[in-house]
Image 1 (cartoon, helix red, strand yellow):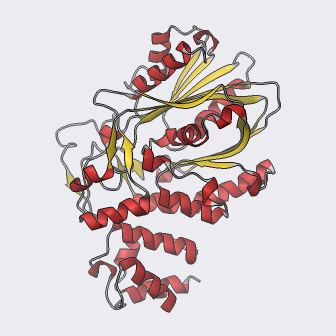
Image 2 (cartoon, chains in turn green, blue; image 1 turned 180 degrees about the vertical axis):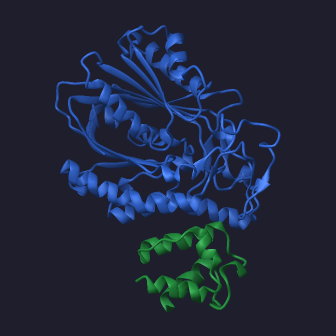
Image 3 (tube, chains in turn brown, red; image 1 turned 90 degrees about the horizontal axis):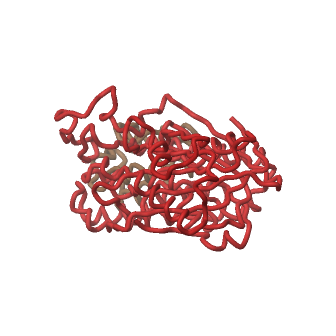
Length: 71
Length: 354
Protein backbone atom coordinates (compact mmCIF):
# COMPACT_ATOMS: atom_id res chain seq x y z
CA UNK A 1 0.00 0.00 0.00
CA UNK A 2 2.80 2.40 0.93
CA UNK A 3 4.44 2.07 -2.43
CA UNK A 4 1.21 2.78 -4.29
CA UNK A 5 0.44 5.77 -2.04
CA UNK A 6 3.89 7.17 -2.63
CA UNK A 7 3.45 6.90 -6.39
CA UNK A 8 0.05 8.58 -6.17
CA UNK A 9 1.61 11.37 -4.08
CA UNK A 10 4.11 11.96 -6.88
CA UNK A 11 1.38 12.15 -9.50
CA UNK A 12 -0.72 14.54 -7.39
CA UNK A 13 2.40 16.49 -6.35
CA UNK A 14 1.75 16.42 -2.59
CA UNK A 15 4.07 15.41 0.24
CA UNK A 16 1.53 13.92 2.61
CA UNK A 17 -1.32 12.34 0.76
CA UNK A 18 -4.46 12.11 2.89
CA UNK A 19 -5.87 8.74 1.81
CA UNK A 20 -9.24 9.46 3.37
CA UNK A 21 -9.80 12.13 0.73
CA UNK A 22 -11.08 11.58 -2.79
CA UNK A 23 -8.87 12.15 -5.82
CA UNK A 24 -11.13 14.96 -6.90
CA UNK A 25 -10.50 16.78 -3.61
CA UNK A 26 -6.96 17.49 -4.75
CA UNK A 27 -6.16 20.61 -6.68
CA UNK A 28 -3.73 18.74 -8.93
CA UNK A 29 -6.39 16.23 -9.95
CA UNK A 30 -7.17 16.61 -13.65
CA UNK A 31 -7.40 14.52 -16.80
CA UNK A 32 -3.61 14.33 -17.07
CA UNK A 33 -3.24 13.08 -13.48
CA UNK A 34 -6.04 10.60 -14.24
CA UNK A 35 -4.19 9.33 -17.30
CA UNK A 36 -0.96 9.04 -15.31
CA UNK A 37 -2.82 6.85 -12.81
CA UNK A 38 -4.21 4.64 -15.60
CA UNK A 39 -0.67 4.30 -16.93
CA UNK A 40 0.62 3.41 -13.46
CA UNK A 41 -2.07 0.73 -13.06
CA UNK A 42 -1.20 -0.68 -16.44
CA UNK A 43 2.58 -0.73 -16.08
CA UNK A 44 3.09 -1.52 -12.38
CA UNK A 45 -0.11 -3.28 -11.32
CA UNK A 46 -1.14 -5.05 -14.52
CA UNK A 47 -4.75 -3.91 -14.25
CA UNK A 48 -6.99 -1.35 -15.92
CA UNK A 49 -9.76 1.01 -14.88
CA UNK A 50 -11.49 3.84 -16.63
CA UNK A 51 -10.73 7.41 -15.58
CA UNK A 52 -14.33 7.70 -14.38
CA UNK A 53 -13.94 4.68 -12.11
CA UNK A 54 -10.78 6.10 -10.57
CA UNK A 55 -12.44 9.45 -9.87
CA UNK A 56 -15.54 7.80 -8.38
CA UNK A 57 -13.81 6.09 -5.42
CA UNK A 58 -15.02 7.45 -2.08
CA UNK A 59 -11.44 7.65 -0.85
CA UNK A 60 -7.93 7.12 -2.16
CA UNK A 61 -7.65 4.36 0.39
CA UNK A 62 -10.60 2.51 -1.16
CA UNK A 63 -8.95 2.87 -4.55
CA UNK A 64 -5.66 1.44 -3.23
CA UNK A 65 -7.45 -1.50 -1.60
CA UNK A 66 -9.21 -2.29 -4.85
CA UNK A 67 -5.97 -2.16 -6.83
CA UNK A 68 -4.10 -4.33 -4.34
CA UNK A 69 -6.96 -6.83 -4.12
CA UNK A 70 -6.45 -7.43 -7.83
CA UNK A 71 -2.81 -8.42 -7.35
CA UNK B 1 -7.18 -12.12 -38.98
CA UNK B 2 -3.77 -12.98 -40.41
CA UNK B 3 -2.47 -12.35 -43.90
CA UNK B 4 0.62 -13.40 -45.82
CA UNK B 5 1.50 -11.72 -49.10
CA UNK B 6 4.45 -12.47 -51.38
CA UNK B 7 6.13 -10.85 -54.39
CA UNK B 8 5.04 -7.35 -53.46
CA UNK B 9 7.01 -4.35 -52.33
CA UNK B 10 6.74 -0.70 -51.42
CA UNK B 11 8.62 1.23 -54.10
CA UNK B 12 8.23 4.78 -52.82
CA UNK B 13 6.75 6.97 -50.08
CA UNK B 14 6.00 10.67 -50.41
CA UNK B 15 4.60 12.65 -47.48
CA UNK B 16 2.83 15.95 -48.13
CA UNK B 17 2.51 18.38 -45.21
CA UNK B 18 0.81 21.76 -44.90
CA UNK B 19 3.28 24.66 -44.63
CA UNK B 20 1.47 26.24 -41.73
CA UNK B 21 2.97 25.26 -38.35
CA UNK B 22 1.19 26.15 -35.10
CA UNK B 23 2.94 26.17 -31.71
CA UNK B 24 1.37 24.58 -28.63
CA UNK B 25 1.98 27.78 -26.65
CA UNK B 26 -0.04 29.81 -29.13
CA UNK B 27 -3.16 27.75 -28.43
CA UNK B 28 -2.72 27.26 -24.71
CA UNK B 29 -4.90 30.21 -23.74
CA UNK B 30 -7.92 28.46 -25.29
CA UNK B 31 -7.72 25.58 -22.83
CA UNK B 32 -9.47 25.47 -19.49
CA UNK B 33 -6.13 24.76 -17.79
CA UNK B 34 -3.59 26.90 -15.95
CA UNK B 35 -0.43 27.71 -17.93
CA UNK B 36 1.58 25.51 -15.53
CA UNK B 37 -0.72 22.55 -16.12
CA UNK B 38 -0.67 23.13 -19.85
CA UNK B 39 3.12 23.02 -19.81
CA UNK B 40 2.94 19.76 -17.88
CA UNK B 41 0.59 18.39 -20.51
CA UNK B 42 2.95 19.51 -23.26
CA UNK B 43 5.89 17.77 -21.61
CA UNK B 44 4.09 14.50 -20.81
CA UNK B 45 2.50 14.12 -24.23
CA UNK B 46 5.35 15.52 -26.29
CA UNK B 47 3.33 18.35 -27.82
CA UNK B 48 5.18 21.18 -29.51
CA UNK B 49 4.27 22.14 -33.05
CA UNK B 50 1.66 20.81 -35.46
CA UNK B 51 0.90 21.33 -39.13
CA UNK B 52 -2.53 22.66 -39.99
CA UNK B 53 -4.09 22.97 -43.43
CA UNK B 54 -4.96 26.47 -44.64
CA UNK B 55 -8.69 27.28 -44.77
CA UNK B 56 -10.14 25.63 -47.85
CA UNK B 57 -7.37 23.05 -48.28
CA UNK B 58 -8.71 19.50 -48.27
CA UNK B 59 -7.28 15.99 -48.26
CA UNK B 60 -7.83 15.95 -52.02
CA UNK B 61 -5.56 18.99 -52.47
CA UNK B 62 -2.64 17.37 -50.66
CA UNK B 63 -3.04 14.16 -52.69
CA UNK B 64 -3.32 16.05 -55.95
CA UNK B 65 -0.22 18.11 -55.16
CA UNK B 66 1.77 15.01 -54.23
CA UNK B 67 0.73 13.03 -57.29
CA UNK B 68 1.56 15.98 -59.55
CA UNK B 69 5.01 16.15 -57.93
CA UNK B 70 5.61 12.46 -58.60
CA UNK B 71 4.47 12.77 -62.23
CA UNK B 72 6.55 15.93 -62.82
CA UNK B 73 9.66 14.29 -61.39
CA UNK B 74 9.23 11.07 -63.31
CA UNK B 75 8.85 9.06 -60.14
CA UNK B 76 5.47 7.70 -61.22
CA UNK B 77 3.61 7.55 -64.53
CA UNK B 78 -0.16 8.10 -64.63
CA UNK B 79 -0.64 5.26 -67.13
CA UNK B 80 1.03 2.75 -64.79
CA UNK B 81 -1.55 3.10 -62.03
CA UNK B 82 -3.85 0.07 -61.84
CA UNK B 83 -5.60 1.04 -58.64
CA UNK B 84 -5.98 4.23 -56.62
CA UNK B 85 -6.91 3.78 -52.95
CA UNK B 86 -7.88 6.81 -50.93
CA UNK B 87 -7.96 6.10 -47.19
CA UNK B 88 -9.39 9.01 -45.23
CA UNK B 89 -12.05 10.34 -42.88
CA UNK B 90 -12.19 13.66 -44.65
CA UNK B 91 -13.43 13.17 -48.23
CA UNK B 92 -14.39 16.18 -50.34
CA UNK B 93 -17.94 14.86 -50.78
CA UNK B 94 -20.21 12.05 -49.57
CA UNK B 95 -20.45 11.29 -53.27
CA UNK B 96 -18.47 10.81 -55.48
CA UNK B 97 -15.41 9.05 -54.04
CA UNK B 98 -12.38 11.34 -53.76
CA UNK B 99 -10.28 8.73 -55.59
CA UNK B 100 -12.57 9.18 -58.63
CA UNK B 101 -12.08 12.96 -58.48
CA UNK B 102 -8.30 12.42 -58.60
CA UNK B 103 -8.75 9.85 -61.38
CA UNK B 104 -10.62 12.44 -63.40
CA UNK B 105 -8.20 15.25 -62.68
CA UNK B 106 -5.20 13.28 -63.91
CA UNK B 107 -7.01 11.47 -66.72
CA UNK B 108 -6.10 8.02 -65.44
CA UNK B 109 -6.94 4.91 -67.47
CA UNK B 110 -10.43 3.48 -67.38
CA UNK B 111 -8.73 0.24 -66.35
CA UNK B 112 -7.77 1.79 -63.04
CA UNK B 113 -9.82 0.81 -60.01
CA UNK B 114 -10.71 3.67 -57.64
CA UNK B 115 -11.73 2.99 -54.06
CA UNK B 116 -12.29 5.19 -51.01
CA UNK B 117 -11.85 3.57 -47.61
CA UNK B 118 -13.11 5.20 -44.43
CA UNK B 119 -10.42 4.47 -41.86
CA UNK B 120 -8.26 6.51 -39.53
CA UNK B 121 -5.37 5.55 -37.31
CA UNK B 122 -4.94 2.06 -38.80
CA UNK B 123 -5.44 3.45 -42.30
CA UNK B 124 -1.92 2.81 -43.50
CA UNK B 125 -2.02 -0.86 -42.48
CA UNK B 126 -5.55 -1.44 -43.78
CA UNK B 127 -4.59 0.33 -47.02
CA UNK B 128 -1.48 -1.84 -47.39
CA UNK B 129 -3.54 -5.00 -46.83
CA UNK B 130 -6.10 -3.86 -49.43
CA UNK B 131 -3.33 -2.93 -51.89
CA UNK B 132 -1.67 -6.33 -51.47
CA UNK B 133 -4.97 -8.18 -51.94
CA UNK B 134 -5.44 -6.33 -55.22
CA UNK B 135 -1.88 -7.09 -56.28
CA UNK B 136 -2.68 -10.79 -55.92
CA UNK B 137 -4.57 -10.28 -59.20
CA UNK B 138 -2.53 -10.47 -62.39
CA UNK B 139 -4.33 -7.44 -63.80
CA UNK B 140 -2.96 -5.29 -61.01
CA UNK B 141 0.73 -4.44 -61.12
CA UNK B 142 0.90 -1.14 -59.32
CA UNK B 143 -1.33 0.33 -56.61
CA UNK B 144 -1.14 3.90 -55.39
CA UNK B 145 -2.16 4.10 -51.74
CA UNK B 146 -3.24 7.56 -50.61
CA UNK B 147 -3.54 8.19 -46.89
CA UNK B 148 -4.87 11.66 -46.21
CA UNK B 149 -6.67 13.50 -43.46
CA UNK B 150 -7.52 17.13 -42.87
CA UNK B 151 -9.47 16.85 -39.64
CA UNK B 152 -8.21 20.00 -37.88
CA UNK B 153 -11.35 21.97 -38.86
CA UNK B 154 -13.41 19.37 -36.97
CA UNK B 155 -11.51 19.76 -33.69
CA UNK B 156 -12.70 22.34 -31.18
CA UNK B 157 -10.03 24.95 -30.36
CA UNK B 158 -11.06 24.58 -26.71
CA UNK B 159 -10.46 20.81 -26.58
CA UNK B 160 -7.11 20.09 -24.97
CA UNK B 161 -7.69 16.33 -25.48
CA UNK B 162 -7.43 16.57 -29.23
CA UNK B 163 -6.46 20.07 -30.38
CA UNK B 164 -2.77 20.07 -29.38
CA UNK B 165 -2.10 16.82 -31.20
CA UNK B 166 -4.18 17.06 -34.37
CA UNK B 167 -2.25 17.40 -37.60
CA UNK B 168 -3.20 17.47 -41.26
CA UNK B 169 -1.22 15.54 -43.87
CA UNK B 170 -1.24 13.15 -46.79
CA UNK B 171 1.08 10.36 -47.86
CA UNK B 172 1.40 8.55 -51.16
CA UNK B 173 2.76 5.02 -51.02
CA UNK B 174 3.40 3.07 -54.23
CA UNK B 175 2.95 -0.68 -53.78
CA UNK B 176 3.78 -3.01 -56.63
CA UNK B 177 4.54 -6.55 -57.69
CA UNK B 178 8.16 -7.70 -57.60
CA UNK B 179 10.15 -10.81 -58.46
CA UNK B 180 11.68 -11.27 -55.03
CA UNK B 181 9.54 -13.25 -52.59
CA UNK B 182 9.61 -10.47 -49.97
CA UNK B 183 7.04 -11.93 -47.56
CA UNK B 184 4.67 -9.42 -45.96
CA UNK B 185 3.09 -10.58 -42.72
CA UNK B 186 0.02 -8.64 -41.68
CA UNK B 187 -2.85 -8.92 -39.23
CA UNK B 188 -5.89 -6.87 -38.36
CA UNK B 189 -8.59 -6.93 -35.70
CA UNK B 190 -11.77 -4.96 -35.09
CA UNK B 191 -14.06 -4.22 -32.15
CA UNK B 192 -17.17 -2.39 -33.28
CA UNK B 193 -18.52 -2.17 -29.73
CA UNK B 194 -16.02 0.69 -29.34
CA UNK B 195 -16.99 2.33 -32.63
CA UNK B 196 -17.99 5.62 -30.99
CA UNK B 197 -14.95 5.98 -28.73
CA UNK B 198 -13.49 8.17 -31.48
CA UNK B 199 -16.32 9.96 -33.22
CA UNK B 200 -17.65 13.05 -34.96
CA UNK B 201 -21.29 12.95 -33.78
CA UNK B 202 -22.87 15.29 -36.33
CA UNK B 203 -22.49 15.79 -40.05
CA UNK B 204 -23.51 12.39 -41.40
CA UNK B 205 -26.98 11.19 -42.32
CA UNK B 206 -27.81 10.07 -38.76
CA UNK B 207 -27.40 13.56 -37.34
CA UNK B 208 -26.99 16.28 -39.97
CA UNK B 209 -25.23 19.51 -38.96
CA UNK B 210 -27.64 22.16 -37.70
CA UNK B 211 -27.51 25.22 -35.44
CA UNK B 212 -28.25 22.84 -32.54
CA UNK B 213 -25.30 20.56 -33.28
CA UNK B 214 -23.01 23.61 -33.36
CA UNK B 215 -23.74 24.57 -29.75
CA UNK B 216 -20.63 24.33 -27.57
CA UNK B 217 -20.94 22.24 -24.42
CA UNK B 218 -18.54 21.63 -21.54
CA UNK B 219 -17.52 18.08 -20.62
CA UNK B 220 -16.55 16.79 -17.15
CA UNK B 221 -12.88 17.67 -17.69
CA UNK B 222 -13.60 21.25 -18.75
CA UNK B 223 -13.23 20.83 -22.51
CA UNK B 224 -15.69 22.63 -24.78
CA UNK B 225 -16.94 20.99 -27.95
CA UNK B 226 -20.05 20.85 -30.10
CA UNK B 227 -21.56 17.81 -31.78
CA UNK B 228 -19.92 18.99 -35.00
CA UNK B 229 -16.53 18.41 -33.38
CA UNK B 230 -14.36 15.35 -33.16
CA UNK B 231 -14.53 13.75 -29.73
CA UNK B 232 -12.14 11.20 -28.29
CA UNK B 233 -12.62 9.26 -25.05
CA UNK B 234 -8.94 9.55 -24.15
CA UNK B 235 -9.02 7.08 -21.23
CA UNK B 236 -10.78 4.42 -23.25
CA UNK B 237 -8.36 4.84 -26.14
CA UNK B 238 -5.36 4.61 -23.80
CA UNK B 239 -6.67 1.45 -22.14
CA UNK B 240 -7.58 -0.08 -25.51
CA UNK B 241 -4.12 0.53 -26.95
CA UNK B 242 -2.25 -0.81 -23.93
CA UNK B 243 -4.53 -3.86 -23.78
CA UNK B 244 -4.61 -4.85 -27.45
CA UNK B 245 -1.43 -3.66 -29.14
CA UNK B 246 1.27 -5.59 -27.20
CA UNK B 247 -0.43 -9.01 -27.71
CA UNK B 248 -0.94 -8.13 -31.38
CA UNK B 249 2.79 -7.50 -31.85
CA UNK B 250 3.69 -10.65 -29.88
CA UNK B 251 1.43 -12.51 -32.30
CA UNK B 252 3.14 -10.84 -35.26
CA UNK B 253 6.53 -12.10 -34.02
CA UNK B 254 5.12 -15.63 -33.97
CA UNK B 255 3.36 -15.24 -37.29
CA UNK B 256 6.48 -13.97 -39.06
CA UNK B 257 9.10 -15.92 -37.11
CA UNK B 258 10.94 -12.64 -36.55
CA UNK B 259 12.81 -12.04 -33.29
CA UNK B 260 11.92 -8.67 -31.72
CA UNK B 261 15.61 -7.69 -31.67
CA UNK B 262 15.98 -8.22 -35.42
CA UNK B 263 13.43 -5.51 -36.25
CA UNK B 264 15.30 -2.40 -37.42
CA UNK B 265 12.50 0.05 -36.75
CA UNK B 266 9.13 0.02 -35.07
CA UNK B 267 7.07 2.46 -37.08
CA UNK B 268 3.89 2.81 -35.04
CA UNK B 269 0.96 5.16 -35.35
CA UNK B 270 1.70 8.18 -33.15
CA UNK B 271 -1.14 9.46 -30.97
CA UNK B 272 1.33 11.01 -28.51
CA UNK B 273 4.79 10.34 -27.10
CA UNK B 274 3.42 9.11 -23.77
CA UNK B 275 1.49 6.18 -25.28
CA UNK B 276 4.33 5.17 -27.61
CA UNK B 277 6.91 5.07 -24.84
CA UNK B 278 4.57 2.91 -22.78
CA UNK B 279 4.16 0.55 -25.73
CA UNK B 280 7.91 0.31 -26.33
CA UNK B 281 8.48 -0.48 -22.64
CA UNK B 282 5.77 -3.10 -22.62
CA UNK B 283 7.17 -4.83 -25.69
CA UNK B 284 10.68 -4.72 -24.31
CA UNK B 285 11.86 -2.72 -27.30
CA UNK B 286 14.37 0.16 -26.92
CA UNK B 287 12.51 3.47 -27.17
CA UNK B 288 15.07 4.65 -29.76
CA UNK B 289 13.80 1.98 -32.14
CA UNK B 290 10.24 3.27 -31.95
CA UNK B 291 10.28 6.89 -33.17
CA UNK B 292 7.84 9.10 -31.26
CA UNK B 293 8.74 12.44 -32.83
CA UNK B 294 5.92 12.97 -35.33
CA UNK B 295 3.37 14.49 -32.95
CA UNK B 296 5.87 17.05 -31.60
CA UNK B 297 6.99 18.08 -35.08
CA UNK B 298 3.89 17.74 -37.24
CA UNK B 299 0.91 16.49 -35.22
CA UNK B 300 -1.13 13.32 -35.49
CA UNK B 301 -2.79 13.03 -38.91
CA UNK B 302 -4.35 9.63 -38.09
CA UNK B 303 -3.42 7.08 -40.78
CA UNK B 304 -0.68 9.32 -42.17
CA UNK B 305 1.64 9.18 -39.14
CA UNK B 306 3.29 5.87 -40.11
CA UNK B 307 4.38 6.93 -43.62
CA UNK B 308 5.29 10.39 -42.25
CA UNK B 309 7.51 8.75 -39.67
CA UNK B 310 9.17 6.61 -42.34
CA UNK B 311 9.79 9.65 -44.56
CA UNK B 312 10.96 11.88 -41.70
CA UNK B 313 13.11 9.43 -39.74
CA UNK B 314 14.55 7.27 -42.50
CA UNK B 315 14.43 9.50 -45.60
CA UNK B 316 17.12 8.75 -48.22
CA UNK B 317 18.55 5.94 -46.07
CA UNK B 318 15.67 3.81 -47.23
CA UNK B 319 16.51 4.58 -50.88
CA UNK B 320 19.97 3.06 -50.52
CA UNK B 321 19.35 0.38 -47.95
CA UNK B 322 16.79 -2.21 -46.93
CA UNK B 323 15.38 -2.49 -43.41
CA UNK B 324 13.01 -4.74 -41.53
CA UNK B 325 10.06 -2.65 -40.36
CA UNK B 326 7.36 -3.52 -37.88
CA UNK B 327 4.43 -1.17 -38.50
CA UNK B 328 1.25 -0.79 -36.48
CA UNK B 329 -1.87 1.35 -36.40
CA UNK B 330 -4.65 1.47 -33.80
CA UNK B 331 -7.66 3.63 -33.18
CA UNK B 332 -11.02 4.52 -34.71
CA UNK B 333 -13.28 1.57 -35.35
CA UNK B 334 -11.92 0.27 -33.05
CA UNK B 335 -9.30 -1.18 -35.34
CA UNK B 336 -5.80 -2.46 -34.69
CA UNK B 337 -3.44 -3.81 -37.29
CA UNK B 338 0.24 -4.56 -37.78
CA UNK B 339 2.64 -5.46 -40.58
CA UNK B 340 6.12 -6.98 -40.62
CA UNK B 341 8.02 -6.51 -43.87
CA UNK B 342 11.27 -5.49 -45.45
CA UNK B 343 11.21 -2.03 -46.98
CA UNK B 344 14.07 -0.53 -48.96
CA UNK B 345 15.71 0.49 -52.21
CA UNK B 346 12.87 2.97 -52.60
CA UNK B 347 12.68 5.27 -55.59
CA UNK B 348 11.69 8.09 -53.27
CA UNK B 349 11.10 8.64 -49.56
CA UNK B 350 10.71 12.29 -48.69
CA UNK B 351 8.53 15.11 -47.41
CA UNK B 352 7.22 18.01 -49.47
CA UNK B 353 5.03 20.92 -48.40
CA UNK B 354 1.96 22.57 -49.80
